[in-house]
Length: 101
Image (cartoon, rainbow, N blue to C red; front, side):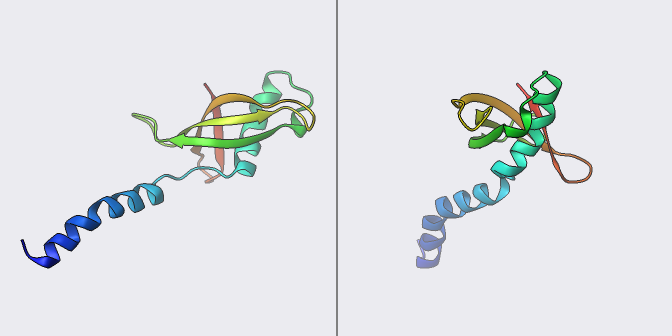
């Protein structure tokens, strides 16, 4: 095997990881919170302005655009966090929209 082939083959895992990291578009915590608040509002949560979301992990869902994320939802500053799986996708205006699972 030629040396340049060996170097390229050795670099493949790193290239694959770099490509995967760049390819996954996910919302920031602030974007996720803004996208999730209408869901809380529709469920009758009157204190949804104090609600915050923290992205824990995201993955590409099968068969649809966007990302499926495990989030930590905190209904208010003194409330405990609870895990919620949320689907996020970019809307027509490029802003994130959320769908609770």
